[in-house]
Amino acid sequence: MDYALMQRVFPFFLEAAWITILLSVLTAILGLICAMLGTAARLSRFRVLRFLGAAYVSVFRGTPALIQLFILYFGGPQIGIQLDAFEAGVIGLGVNVGAYMTETMRGAIISVDKGQGEAARTLGMSKWQAMRNVILPQAMRLMIRPLGVNLNTLIKSTALVAAISVVELTYTAQRYIGSTYKPFEMFLIAGLLYMIIIYVVGLAVTWADRKARLN
Amino acid sequence: MGLDFSVIPKYLDIVLLGALWTIGITVGAALVSFFGGIFLAVIALYAPAVVRWPFRIFSFLFLGTPLLLQLFLIYFGLVQIGIDVPAFVAGVIGLGLHFAVYNSELFQTSILAVDKGQIEAARTLGLSRMQALRKVVVPQAVRDVIPPIGNNMIALLKDSALVSVIGVSELTLSAQRAIGSTYRPFEFYVLVAAIYYIINLGMEAVLRRVERRIQASK
Image (cartoon, rainbow over all chains, first blue to last red; front, side, top):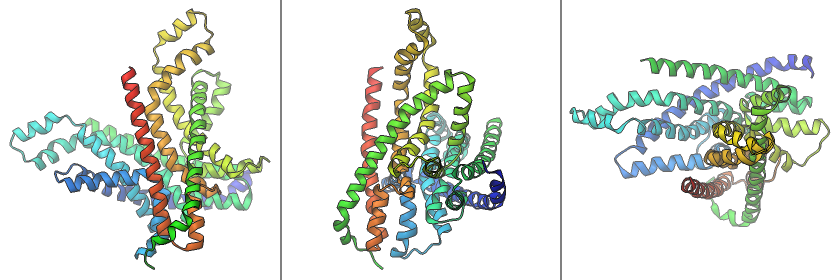
């Protein structure tokens, strides 16, 4: 193992790790927004919206995220969408993870006991009031942990944007493997940084989950 | 530059050949991940600490890092230690190992969930520990865990697109070849997405049938 080399390239990996973190944060925010819209559509009383929501989830979960990225980044200009690699990465991954998160949110909402909604309606609340004041607060508690799993997957899938040459951790590792022929060392540095990011996010999720359960 | 899907028929055979490779890689990697997963689970649960620890570190590394990074490690790592395998083999090994680690987690829980009395009974009948595991515990554990393993295999199909990056000529890379000579990325990537989607729907349909079978047999 070449420790001197590892020490020398480490600052470049650290810089790349910030890009990975930034990508993850932006993607997570966009994913959550897409998931809220997707969940609202899937639970809507309009058949067209329900269909659109289901189609969104099925298509984006049923095709590789890498291909979705390629369609957006390489195919986008043909239909008038010009994005740089980073923007395409955030939008592509965000919409993709949104489809997975939609299923998580919907699952949490429909697993809240049916009697809760019925009781709220009997007390004279409108459907929307029942959703907002009774069902959603309970569902939020149920969805923190599974959303944490989505986040974990999301952080790892930010590596895909290396394929459209965004200089994040995996791209940096790939470049140094190519120039130094030390795949194991480069894998260890990048891997360690990924695991630190995932660990910290995991701690935050556990904290949020415990807090939500105490309330 | 507008859209022109009329370029597709000329390259359809290349793309469909790529789809066959994708299916081949998925099946190969699925097999590696299934048996590798059982192997890793048995080691994690029953092997002595000296054997267990290296495998535990390996699992820990593979659970916490992106597949793409692991593919680079395996492809270039094998070359570095002097094993020059074709990209296809590196892809199958990489994908297979990645999902073996995920499957191993599932197998471990399901092996532990098999009733203890089963092992005791098998041992009383004179089976060795290994025999009891192989003939009594693992078959029951496998049945219980087929639905989530099936989901992993559907995920594996979609992740197989990543091996295009290390130069395996599967569906994604064959589309890239066609794009190289036509400059029509949108058309070909949409076509490829549609093919993945169809294979994905097929796998989901099979999995649902298998799940119903298992439910019925219980």
